[in-house]
Amino acid sequence: MTLSPEALRRKMWAADGVVETRRVVVVLARCEEIETVVDWLGERYGDDPGFVVEDHGPYYRIDCEEGLEVDLDEIEPLIGHSYNVFDFLVSVSTAVGRTMTVGNRFVLTTSLLGLEEEVPGG
Picture 1 (cartoon, rainbow, N blue to C red):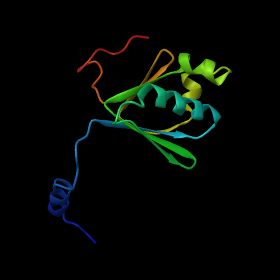
Picture 2 (tube, rainbow, N blue to C red):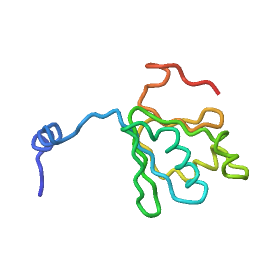
Picture 3 (spheres, rainbow, N blue to C red):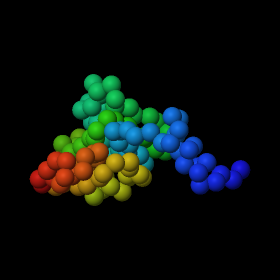
Picture 4 (cartoon, one colour):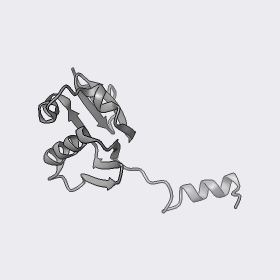
């Protein structure tokens, strides 16, 4: 099926087409350390009804409103060996939102950092 540019534009902007959202998503490759990270995130964000963890076999998909932070200084002692933000990034398969590292934290947000809010300090 071939769509003309105008037909594609109508389809994208239809009520069931492109929808703006303030959700972020991170997909993490499953491993022993990520199991600990997912448990930690569940404890930190589990009371938020917008926070969702989906098990997709070799990956976890984590959704939430506005953003999340993964503090590797808190997680490293739970893992029991050296584990920093760069070790964590190896397991980040994809993310939807704006990502950055601040010190030993992974930050995922919808905010336009530097415009809508201050860039977090390290």
